[in-house]
Length: 152
Image 1 (spheres, helix red, strand yellow):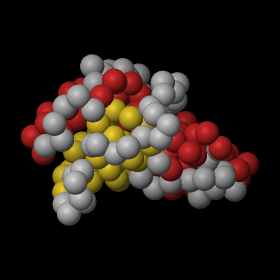
Image 2 (tube, one colour):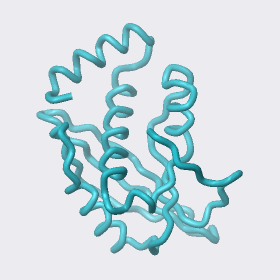
Image 3 (cartoon, one colour):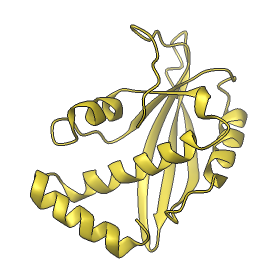
């Protein structure tokens, strides 16, 4: 998608065709674009997509939509400093869509758990559109059966 008007037209058509809320489709599109940046970055092998976003892609967004993205990280420490640095680099990864991402807030989650995590508040910017995204980062979660290479 080269511009916001094209994206809005596509979403309008998909909303009618699939009977899905336009905000859900827009958020999903922006999360997919963020995944593209991750996949094209030097950190592509450090993230494992899991949860609702993966399920929605497997079964179709009309069967399972989600409002956030769940990622497990590997091969680097899950600290506020590392997250800030890694995502700053990911956001600089070139894509042709003109979408910018800004990290707005990092909050600790699962503090009582053996495996800590963070919730990232990210703003996706395309033209005048500002779409808030939530990303949950964890480490150490058991993956059953195991991680796979999945072409998103």
